[in-house]
Image (cartoon, rainbow, N blue to C red; front, top):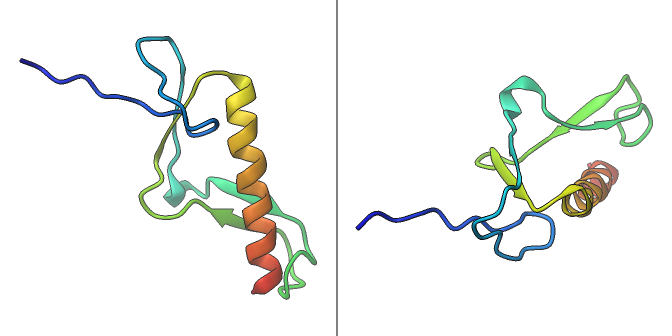
Length: 85
């Protein structure tokens, strides 16, 4: 008996099931992240990219609405982290 992966939406956190969905492969080593403008943190230099945490390479979403939920939360966390730095 083979097992099928059970994907959970990274936006709404509900199961995706047997439906077509968005699947992203994000590679932090390629500077994939939230671009923060100068002055967002104590580093008054140029733009800074707040990268994904290690291990956050694959993301799955039902649709555009769900990816927006995730992206908005990711941007908010990146800005808050930069303000604390």
